[in-house]
Length: 224
Image (tube, rainbow, N blue to C red; front, side):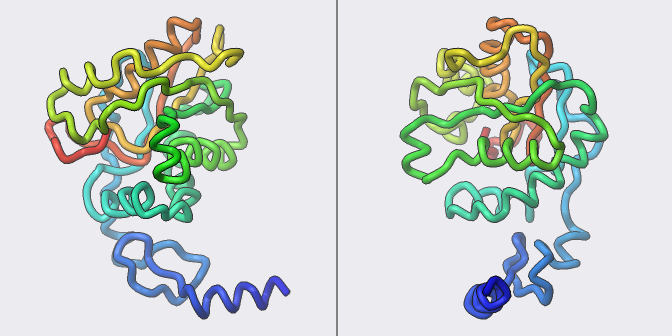
């Protein structure tokens, strides 16, 4: 029965490259050879995010990665998340091994979760934790629905936009813990920094972070 279901799925929903959307000959693949060769791997260390002692990033936030992330977030293509997590896991193992006790994420507001139908950072954190064979725990609440960071262009405006937005989830095991915090995109680092400040005040021993992609702080088109 499962073979029949797989055949029907491939018949009506043939596999496509997650970047250029061209048909793929092999359903086990996620992208074509051309896109794989063109992926903009993050070169060197990510700029330090205030409050975090380390950061692992898979890609630069440019095409074709940018388009795939936006489709994941705004068109509901959650099927991309496990593959993004695999690429992230490679960088986390190389750069952050042994530096965290568990994985958590930057939460979205209840309104945004209702609008999208999911929290992409949570799904990404859970998929990454599976790849790393690590524990995943919720630690943060977003208590105010603020405007998207993409609408605030300056670093100062982004910091103000996330001020007081996050709180510790009651009972979260933060005190004395080393925590890997996951988000999808890093730009100025304002969102992660706001989360890091809350976690530090709650007694976190150390914080590191990971993301699919990061962009130059001067890039106003970025999302976080």
